[in-house]
Length: 436
Image (cartoon, rainbow, N blue to C red):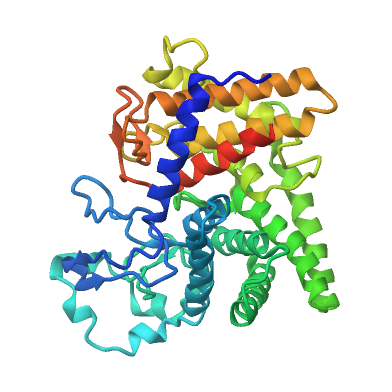
């Protein structure tokens, strides 16, 4: 007989809160975001997903009222675990909005003379040049406005993980399910366009998921490999055997490249390979663990089945246990609050909800993979995952709100409020816990 613990009771309550709060970011059509410095007034369209539904302007919270390709894919993927009719409607709207985004062109903006005139003089330094807009590849954008318009601000581009993540999300939603004629056609069209985009661009360097450094990144390549492998099966089912073979071949090539990210002497997967091959302080990065859980699958390498992934998580535990005051003298049974990488200076440079939840989810997925062959190891991993959830429990207020970070010294919430990815990470971690 299983024993219901305080953690179990808290999870049950927080799950309902997280599911409700996450959906506030989807189709947030009743919220208008004004950016007077940029001459903009943004009203989200149905199917858009804002990273945070709280309008902010770095006052002090960041302006996250954008539709990030990766964040939106993560949120819509987590939405599969919310059992209501609204979830299916949200997914269909997301597909329609995504197809609309695929049709965007830089010329759509440059042809509308006068938009620059609406930008305040002291904001023009933050606006993109005409040449950048003319060469725009919209699916290589990091983010767009949730009203379906191009982001005019200077930002680090391109970023290629988002479209691959969208392929995986749509495939998972569509598996064995019909949404009706028009929506089934829309799903097929979106998958075909996005898989072809991944095939065309995966060899190119891009910015990492933190939008900070251009290189070849473990997370991006791992997600692209999964998108092409699973996309190949879908293409074959559509009767496109030639494209399926190409996707499968490229997926295998990416898997081969991923082996070069392992650092045997240091015992972890590097998060990036720069052009000069030199190590950076960001090499040990939670992005590697996020890659394992977002890509999924049961491969013996580069998945929760991979012991080297667990070794990478061990190293991350060690640096954040040392660096963060909130990890010192912690209560019995509580795990390590995790950030992104050592030396992070964004806002408090503190612990992230989605980082700590990713560690929990990884442990649960690995426990599920090992429970037949090694029940002792599986039980240890399940307990380790619960330790990470105890961290989340400790730093989540009674009303259940989850921000982006909690301060490394005090545990106070920092950065964006109501971060949709934080709620999504909680939903998927708890779902993985049930499997473990």
